[in-house]
Image (cartoon, rainbow, N blue to C red; front, top):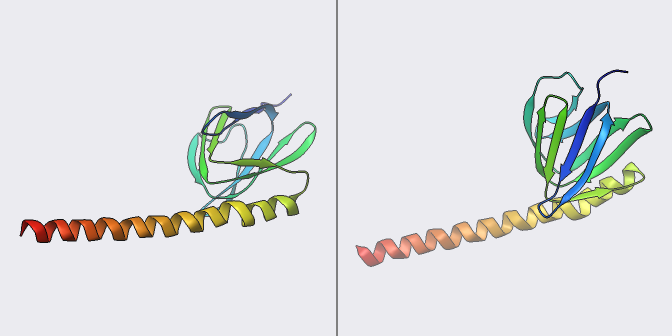
Amino acid sequence: MPDTMTLNILLPQRVYATITGVERIVAENGEGAFGLLPHRLDCVAALRPGILAYVTADGEHWLAIDEGTLVKTGLNVRVAARAVQAGADLPSLHAAIANQYLAIDENERAARGAMRKLEAGFVHALGEHHA
């Protein structure tokens, strides 16, 4: 039997799943999709919202994940993500990504932009006060 990997999926508040017997994994980062096999070199990747696919002896499985980090060390792969959603079919998972995770990112970008403006205004006002 060929070597297989163990996939640990971690959420901020709990361990979502530990899957053994993983033959290969496909994930998405800013450059596109990439694959992992058991004897690939160790790596770290920043993941974007997308589909995480993995294959075990009983077939292919898919998860919609929010942005996170993937770390491969030896035969262990850890994925830490803000949110994960399992689904029976790819169209529903793609819809979940578009409706939930990408919308959250847009809201967070807007909030961060507003915070930058507030911080810049505060620094500017503080500079005027001390001048």
